[in-house]
Image (tube, rainbow over all chains, first blue to last red; front, top):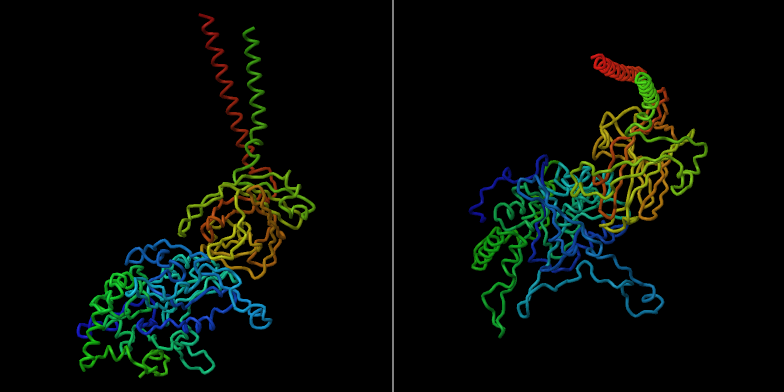
Length: 360
Length: 277
């Protein structure tokens, strides 16, 4: 949908029943360089110990590829239809599909000199990011891109419905999906039920755990008392993430998702209605055997359609159109939003009740 | 002679009826359905080990198990079909031994797809109540003693499906063995409980009890389990059965004797009449 065609109002935004506002994130895949800074920011903050070593609440995987956990897109979960009554059967990934955390013998390399290299003590056969940069296609037309993933804090979260104890819930003030650690008994129906496999089982604590959208940061519970976007967003060197509310009509997320239709849900066919959106990736055109540029897209459209649904065609066309307009000396609000470097506009988390008016 | 034979026949019938009247009620009442006999013993410690010889001469009941009603995926697919249950009480403790077939001992929950074997005993918090069997209700909560093959024992309070709450400290202990494709688990706890949310086994009323087993290899957990119906432990004082039981049996016996005697007399008169013609 282009700006000219846009007629949605915030009231038309589909947020879950009983939710006041819905946090959302847009990730521009054209800016991701696969540096994993977001992954490490998250891991240092939330998952560096205590049975969480194998977890990556934020991961960055290379596409096309198996991803993390391996083959997650084929493990089921989500909903059978758009009326969200019957869930799709799902599977729990195996430990080997996540990749067991590796141990390293730093002592013998760094201190005693017995070994020349720091190597994993095991002989790992798989792990997160195992197939980094592998992608698909043949030289000179091979291709890949990076896909950062967190919990999508879905509007219709099948993990919430899967839990027989109502331990997984979508909190009313901002739609963040959380696991009540007192209620959870580690049955892992949520792990089965999430089609994105973004809930993880902590075998030490015998509870399921997940990305919590850094809600203490969002609530300003840190030492400075200020509202902060999730660590994965703020630490990103290329600032590819926008954070705010889907129902904030002045915010860039609303504009990208609802007005321009260029920020898309990953695997919409799972029908959980994620609130993490992606600007689909562009790539240089293909080359002929003699090295000439030819008018053929490098990343096959049907692959992007598999990931982002049919809307990807309109989204790519819209971005292309606006890019051309700017190249020709014209103006485009869409291009300005996608290139904005003002943190106050990138991260709009104080716009509703109790907000400090950080975004203006 | 025919008259003598008739008298003998009548005597045999009457004697048989008297024997039936005397033995019949005892046979019928020997073990009511859903009753699990409780052996009384002095020394409880010798029953703590599920493999102890002391269990060999303790009466057992085969309790059928079937899948629990649950919305969980594959909930109807459960492994355990029956459990062998034995119960012993001492003056101060209750021992319950469950044994059921499970070819594989799943003792670990260390991986995301690993689930441990488990067993549980459900009791009404109010020992005289009969709560809904699926984890009780708000008004009639249940206690659940859970043994896990990981080695832990939990005590839970529940007031309906999905409401289980764990007591901070379990007062139930459990010991388990896995031999020849069978788990045997002995739960034991003091009869009396100080906490009002725990079942106090006061030995004043029959105590309802139900059983559950989870097969970790079949990824059974939560509501995905094999469960029994309510059984009971006959703790009510033995008053010889309901007061009307003997009266009913007496009336029934007299009626049978009367019918037989009338029939015999009728047959005899008919033959006499035939002989007169």
